Every structure is written in C-alpha cells, then in structure tokens.
Amino acid sequence: MILKANWKYNLCWLILMVAGFYLMNTLILVGIINSFLENMMVTIGINIILAVGLNLVIGFAGQFSLGHAGFMAVGAYATAIMISKTPTAGTFYISIIVGVIVAIIAALVVGIPTLRLRGDYLAIATMGAAEIIRIIINNLKITNGPSGMFNIPQFATWPVVYIMVCVTTIIIVNFIHSRGGRAALAVREDEIAAESMGINVFKWKLAAFVLGAATAAVAGSMQASYLQTIAPSNFNIMESIAILIIVVLGGVGSITGSFVAAGILGVVDAALQNFGALRMVIYALVLILIMIFKPSGIMGATELSFKRLFNRKNKKVGAKS
Amino acid sequence: MTSLLNVEDLVKNFGGLTAVSDVNMHLDDDELVALIGPNGAGKTTLFNLLTGVIVPSSGSITFRGTDGTISLNGMKAYKIANLGMARTFQNIRLFKELSVLDNVLIAMTAHYKEDFFQSVFRLPRFYKTESQIRKEAIELLKIFELQNDLDKLAKNLPYGIQRRLEIVRGLAMKPKVLFLDEPAAGMNPEETADLTRLIRQVQRDFHITVLLIEHDMSLVMNLASRIYVLDHGSLLAEGTPTEIQQNKAVIKAYLGEEA
Ligand SMILES: Nc1ncnc2c1ncn2[C@@H]1O[C@H](COP(=O)(O)OP(=O)(O)O)[C@@H](O)[C@H]1O
Ligand SMILES: [Mg+2]
Image 1 (cartoon, chains in turn green, blue):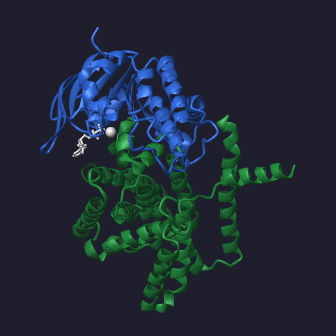
Image 2 (tube, protein in one colour):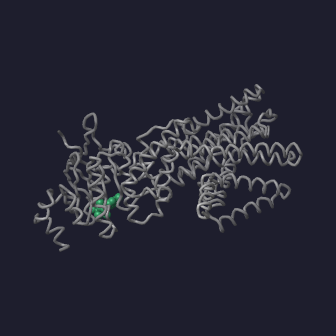
Image 3 (spheres, chains in turn brown, blue):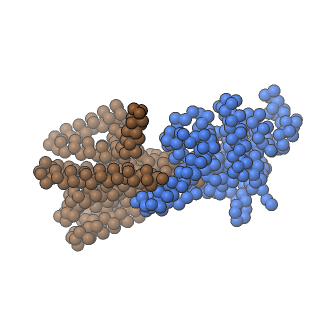
C-alpha cells in the first residue's frame, strides 16, 4: 500500500536530481556557468552537505552541537593524506570511506560523554572537542602541521560533489522518516515522555550525532580534493559557526531550508567577493534582518514535498467536480 | 502466584519533604485500580517512582516479568517502559510538533525492527514494516475515534482529544500496566462519561492492568474494582469502592472536606 503510494514521489525526486545534473552539465558546456560560477556551485554543494548534517543534529534530534567543523576536518585530512600519497580515483573513494569511519569513531568518543549534557553545556563541550581535533591536526607531522597541505590531487569535480550532495541528503532525509528518525524527533520534543515510551534517549541522540558527523566528513573530503589545499585554520570555530548560520537562516528543522540558505549565502558570498571587509557587514546585516523579520528562518520547519503538492492538486480537482 | 507489581515500604523525600511515605501496594493481572487523594498527596510522585522517572529514597518496587521477578529500583525509565509499563501525564506530554500518527508510531519503537540500511536506502522490507506498523497504529487510533486526524499536529488538537491521544500512545506500547494520571482532568461530564466507557473497554479488550489517578468520584466508583487512598504521602485506606465510601478516615480526610 505504502509502496505503491511512494514510488510516485520517489520518482519525482529522482527526476529532479537527474534533471538538475543535466541542466548543470549543459550550462557548463555552453559556457553560461564559467569556472567562477562552477566554483560557487561546488562551495554551495559542500555547504549543503554540512548544513543538512548539522540540521539533523540540531533541528531534528534537538542537540545543540557546535563542533561540526571538527568532523569535517577529519574527512578532509583523511582524503588529503591518502590521495597525496597515492593519487588515484580508487584511493580517493576509499579515503572518503576512511574519513567517514574515523569521523564516526571521533563522534562516538566526543558524543558519549557530552551528549549527556544539555543546551549550552553541550554546545561548549562539542566546540571544545572540535578544537581538540584541530589542535591534534595542527601538531601532527603527517598533516604538515599549521601550514596545511597543498597540491592535493583534484578528484572531487563538480559531478562528484553533486552526487555526494544527493547521497548524503537521501540518507539523512530517509533516516528522519524512519524508526530512528522518529525516535530522534521524540527526544527533541520531550525527553521525559520519550523515555517513558521506551525510547533509549541517549542512544538516538548519539545515532543522530554520529550520522551528522559522518556526512560532515564527506563534505571535508570534497573540500580537500576540490580546493586542493587545506589548513587546520579552515576548520576552526568560525567554520562551525558558519555552518550553524546556514542552518538557522534556512530554518532549524527544515532540510529544504538548509538547501535554500546554502544557495543564497553562496551567491551573496560570491557576489560580494570584491567588497573586502564590507562583505562581512552585509553578511551580518542579512542575518540580522532575517532574525528580526523571520526568526524561524526562511523555511521555518516546512519542507518541499511532492506528496503535499500532489494532494493540493487533487484537492483542487476534487473541488471543481 | 505473586502480584504483577509489588511495592514495599516505598519512600521518596524531596529535601525535607516526604512526598511518598512507606507505601505498600500491589497490582494484579487484568484489574482496574484507582489511586485517589487530595492535591499534593503524592499520587503523581508515586507514578513517577513506579515508571522510573525519579528514583526512590528507599523501599522496593518489583515486577513479575516473563522470566522471574525483576527489581525496578534504579532501573532506567525506558527499560521499565519496555518491560510493559505505559503511562500518561497529568500535564499532557505529547510530542506537540509531531503528527497524531507519529506520536503513536514513536510509542511502538521498541516493538518493531528497522535495519539502518533498509530504511536509508528504502528497500522493500522498509515499506513492508512501515505499512504494517501504520496499520496497527491506525487500528488503535480508531478505537478512540482519532483515525481522521492522522496528519494533524498534536498541539492543534482540542484538550480533551490530546488526553485521548496520550492514552492511545500508551496502548501502542503494548503494555501490561497502564498508568493514567488524571485522564479526565478538564473534560466536561459528557466527555468524561465517554472516556469512562473507553477506559473500561480497553482494559477488558487488551487484558491490561490499569492504575488510575482521578478526582472525579463518579468515574472512580464506576470503574475501579479496588481503590487506594493516599494522604500526605501515606496510604490511608485500601478497599472496594463501597468499603472506601464507608471508611471513616477517608470520609474525614478526603470525601468529608468536599461534602
Ligand atoms: N520534583 C519535585 N521536587 C520537589 N517537590 C516535589 C517534586 N515533585 C513533587 N513534589 C512535591 O511532592 C508533593 C506531592 O506532589 P504530587 O505527587 O504532584 O501530588 P498529587 O499528584 O497527589 O497532587 C507536593 O507537595 C509537591 O510539591
Ligand atoms: Mg498529580
């Protein structure tokens, strides 16, 4: 029953993803998207992966984490180190998996003690944990310390990033709409009620946190191999805050919102590239305006849904007859 | 055979205040028991102790599980819940921003499995499980006439309906014991009569034990086969509705002040 009702929506999403890919491909071929715009699009893609993952943790599981950049660093360095040594596409894909695994381990180590904390305490603890990851990278030889790594081979072209955006988003959205995701939502809504319903609150907090960290590592791998240069300072607290800003701007608890906000901020950022310091002022101004006029973010908690679009159409048809 | 739930010399102190004092009680299979007492008597605190939301200062709580008697002292609330203890809350604790259906599905979390890869890659097995549990949830919602509100957010339901949804959510856990904390609070006489009928119906149909906190005496006298009376944290009396109505101490401490 559900299977039949859902293939239609799944097909719509698939068509949208494929169409987006070919649109992008065509626009690049005919030269409408030049290398500057392509760069902007890839940056937006990487930010989408980051924001969607953080939104899972903050918006859906309700855990205020401020350490997302730390897990991103894990993925970035896993890829940078591995493909600098063995520059093959195979190594690149293996390095993504290695980054994800290391990030999962790091998320367990960070999450198990800190997810018992609440609110501000959790934010500070995760921020500290990300800082520790950065300092470790800063002091290792294999990561080339504070000066970072250069000339990393470029395997993360825009199609790879595009596919990774699709894959990570599908995983997270499908997780949200399943047993585990519903348990995470229950935790966000009311921990005492969730616990009284037989839900192991800590376990599902941790699951969301780990899944968010795993996708952040993927984003890190993409960044390292696309930009071809990374340094520990790329993954400091400002990066975590930048990801948080996308989530808040788009709407805490709206994956669609994270897409929209990453897109808008990516364009604004690119358009203001020549404005230097003024850029940060405009950036801040946009945020302040949003917070004043739409504190729940651009999308609030609503999502783009083919199911709802179809239902609306059906209702209109029904009303006419 | 031992009782399903056994409480011995249970005490809970909040600083200097003894909210529950040396309570002894038991619940048997398939019975409907009421817990009454004036405001502040410690009824909700007793529920919180039994469901593991708070930890007793002393005393013991034991539960007859499938393989022997289990001590619930200090056990985590979610584990107690999964032994078969469901509850509602006096100050309604629905998942407000979630749909009616999701509220019920969440309560079923422990009763079905969904592999991470199955759900994330939407394998056929996932859809099969989902449609199965949805069907179960909707069956339950039907009993409480909530089947037409599946997609409504819990917070948008009228107060009385929210209380009903909390009961459905409890039943979705397939409990052995259901604790209801003032389920008729804030309802009009008609709604209360309706609820009384429903509680009796589900207790019989599902063969569960219900422990009910209620102020509405007509509801209690109608439903309960046994009544515990709590006053200032201590048990004042225990007995059938008729015995309780005639109990001098109860009349003095509780019924008397209302008459
Ligand atoms: N968490 C708590 N901390 C301190 N005092 C509490 C707490 N919970 C309940 N109490 C006190 O315990 C007493 C019993 O409360 P309660 O169990 O809610 O009574 P009832 O449900 O019978 O109306 C009250 O005096 C209340 O103020
Ligand atoms: Mg109470």
